Length: 106
Image 1 (cartoon, rainbow, N blue to C red):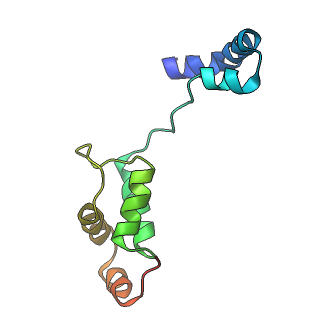
Image 2: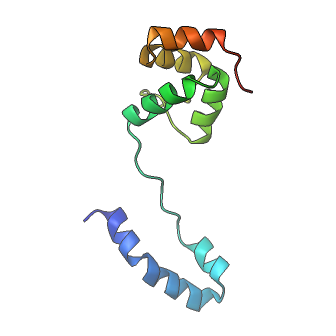
């Protein structure tokens, strides 16, 4: 069992203790760390870029990826250039050509 799994298992008990000490639900929730989002693989991010590229321009996709705190393989934030390179590699040539002809949603 990992430490994360152990913490998740003990979280209700820790919450009950924090509630008894602090006296309010919101203070008890604030006192316990929030679980991190599930681990994302690079394949998940590449798949997301491919799906978004069909409807949105590269700058919008960049905003979405950075808001979700996704990172490139080198650990950097995404830029429109990163997104364009990944989107063109994942999309079929006819799909990317269709996107170039279609107005983008902003």
